[in-house]
Amino acid sequence: MSHFSFLEHFLPEDLLNHFDVIELIELGEVSSKKMIFEIHLNEKNALCGDLEVSDYESKGFLPSTRIQDFPIRGKAVYLVIRRRKWRNKETGKAYCNTYNYRSEGAKLTQELSDFLKGTGRDPRRYDK
Image (tube, rainbow, N blue to C red; front, side):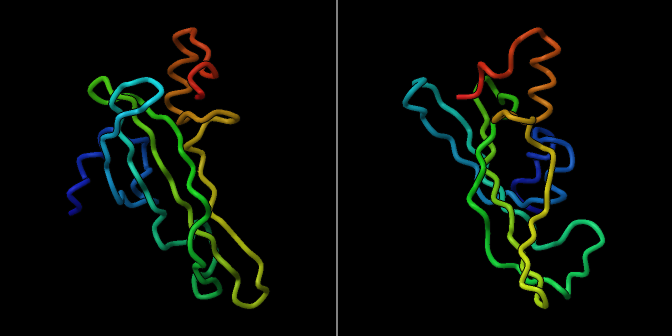
């Protein structure tokens, strides 16, 4: 069991089924002068869906995506997610797993965006 397993209680549902927590960092954010948490996650070495794993090979990671999630202990939480890129061995065609953890057009998790909409707040004002 990972020493980051407690985070499953704070992160979006099923996130840890597809990603491994690599690092949890507490940082001082210069613009807001507040402490934040950054949780770095790498996609597990597994294909989603009905693709045959033997037909594909992992070719590293795509650039990371940083999205905001619910605060923990009054500190902003940012998920820094790196998804794998795959290549079909026969065709050479690139493939990436897709997930719906991020709200459409926002830098917030879907759960946080839904929460803010439910309170009458505009989630776009939090996209900084």
